[in-house]
Length: 184
Image 1 (spheres, rainbow, N blue to C red):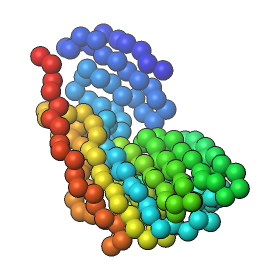
Image 2 (image 1 turned 90 degrees about the vertical axis):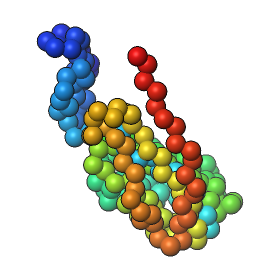
Image 3 (image 1 turned 180 degrees about the vertical axis):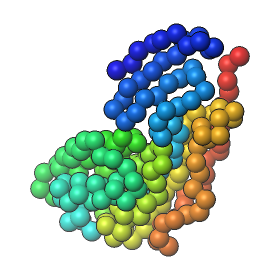
Image 4 (image 1 turned 180 degrees about the horizontal axis):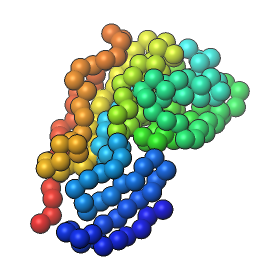
């Protein structure tokens, strides 16, 4: 999967063949569209009908539609229902990262976690999930993730320009930004 090789100018270079392209560190070029940054959305969906939160197969189909809407590639899915009337825990492993959901039907509540890098649009995935679950209220926050190297424009985490959720979805207050410290 990974192998090291000597790079002419900068010492050792690590090349990874990850099935979606070749990524080289230590050189000036990255030969794949997937870079180490993206947006991590955390959403709390309230007022969801109990029947929607108990059906593992329906939730899996919903998250697959959400991934497609975001432009993400599904690699693997695993969903587990906790018995008659119990909640569901599920995850989609994506080429761009993941989408997960955890439901509590007894509280009409679902917690959704969407992390995507590259050109994928996690905000679109959240819109599909929120609409599919017909949430009465959605509170979400977006956390930029990635490489904090100011010399690479491509490595800057994307921040959503606006709240693209429905009027029912409230943006949670942004947490204090932490500056990355590079060791000399």
